[in-house]
Length: 222
Length: 87
Image 1: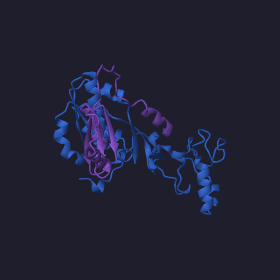
Image 2 (image 1 turned 45 degrees about the vertical axis):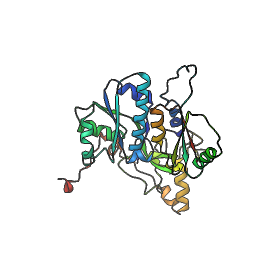
Image 3 (image 1 turned 135 degrees about the horizontal axis):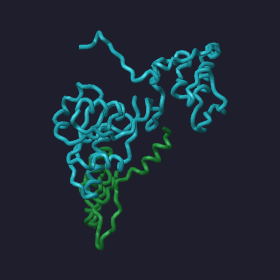
């Protein structure tokens, strides 16, 4: 899922304070899992902004609402009237949702309530960590299911660098060396022969180096 | 982004503007109390003719597990100065 963190309230306030009627609009899928941008968090953010407005003596009406997903047209239907009735929207979706809304509602000012951070997993309750960089050519089959592209700081593909010490990355003693994890896992699977195989040069044109990407399924288009 | 960075960022997340406290001011406190323990205790206090400050208002919940974030936010939004949950 996509992980984001709420922007500081002051930054949000600066973006919205000049509007008279603002909707804090939640997205109840990915960013609700990390408790940052779901409909519940949107409601809480609206409440905080209301209180801030009262303290600043600024007349501004802050509403809250939300939908299940801000990156698909179909989900917006129940919220159309609400969105049409406000001067600006503060979306607590990820960057995808904010852009999707900005395109969909060309005349409504749209602001992001979150800083979108990474594609990650829920390691444990309240702990989210990056697991994928959407590089476009998955290597997990060769690396025992551990991704060196997202989990190695250098994104190297043929074993650890010299900065790997006692299984930790030189960036931080709390950060596992991805290649140490890969070697341990391949050893456990009895697949260390695969480790000796040289990975070919990675084609980064499938990553961001090839520009914004698009995937089209013509057979399901309507 | 490391978890430490995220935690540091949270510390700046206050919207409160510090104000001077006027003389003779007393805070309005809301108490969210569980029906089965804290509220029963308050009830017992009443039976025992014990008194407490009138600026504490008790709201009975079926369980403090029912206490949602937004109840607390709404309390502050509508002018409560403090909230406590008892259960």
